[in-house]
Length: 117
Image 1 (cartoon, helix red, strand yellow):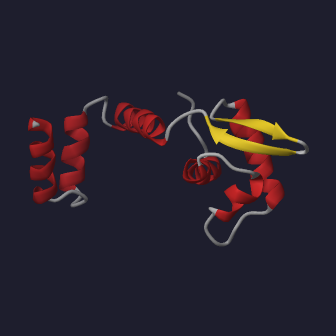
Image 2 (cartoon, rainbow, N blue to C red):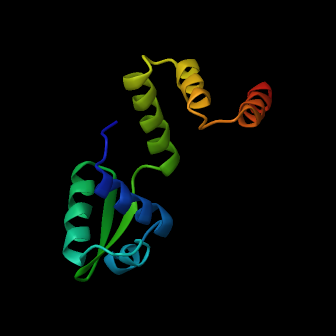
């Protein structure tokens, strides 16, 4: 899976929220300070080229929609992170989070409960 830049991810977050929408709808989902309309339009073109987004034409307007789910992108990003920084070991990744106090023992116990289900 191709990776996205921070700006592309920010636009994808808005597209995922909207599910399908016009440029204005996507811009409305963006946090303040909102990027310029031309910037969002340019990034949407890049996302179309990367096959993350597609569109339908309505007269002169385009209605955009995601081609990949947020869950699928998250899974791919997590796999890349663990592969690149923890030699593919999820155990090492979780150990790192616990060591850095990003994950508590309580969180770990909840994770274990979920895994046992």
